[in-house]
Image (cartoon, rainbow, N blue to C red; front, side):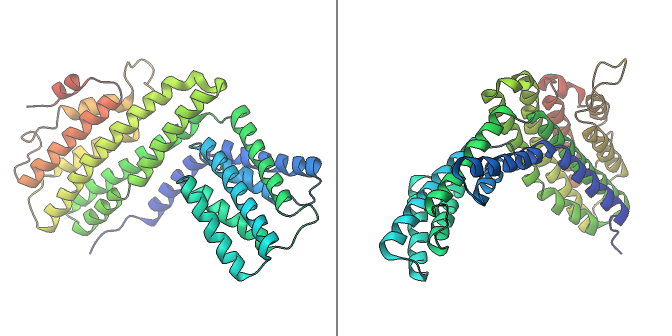
Length: 363
């Protein structure tokens, strides 16, 4: 009977990942809340708008909980709202309101926006604002013009918040790095357990989960790119540029290692499915790699010269020989080869030279 991951362990992992996501996003959430309230007050004070809803919406859409492409979102929102309001107002004045008018104006707004730029936010906002202008009756504040003023107020507030109160991008990047390292370590531990218990169904499940990690890797990469953008634009955050560059290198190395480990897990799944001989020492090697991966990003212990992750990878590397691990079958040899490549990738990602990393591996 296939073994499943205990429910309590799954809950702990989800809770840990959720906490790490919150740690990386709390400042952005606070920015959205403060910005929305400020936009509401400014729109009421400047334009005498009783309910400037879209000013708040504009702030939240522009800022969001991610740092990446904030300036592009601001630009897309501003252009999209302008196109939608302009076309919607022209249609209302020319032919009035109704289902045919909405059909025509939504299509026309999306066509114009799509012609101008490929941004999804720009296209969507152009269509939505045009539909709002046609669908809703004129407001006391001035209809389309009032909505445009609301939106622009929100855009200006979002720009000010993003420029004057930029979040420390290192917080989000660190959180994503820790979360992904934990996720990859979980996969290795579960794969080792499947190998040790000869559980082909569990090995297949681990492989499927490993194949689904690309979205997290891409999110980490986007966070790194956003951090580089913040450091370029904000003088308040330039001091952390070196760490962001290190994280970029770490993410690239983790990406390469993950690709190698997917191959290893696929070979484990195939070997168990067809009952090929696989030594238990491979499970121990995978568990050792899991421990080193989970420690990625931790500083060196007092009195030590290298971080625990690098030390663990160095200790593991010298054991990764096919003869040392008793790898006699083709599948076992492939797994050893992929583990070796992954260790080299991770050592390079943490500052070790390629030649030095390769020298650690037994011939």
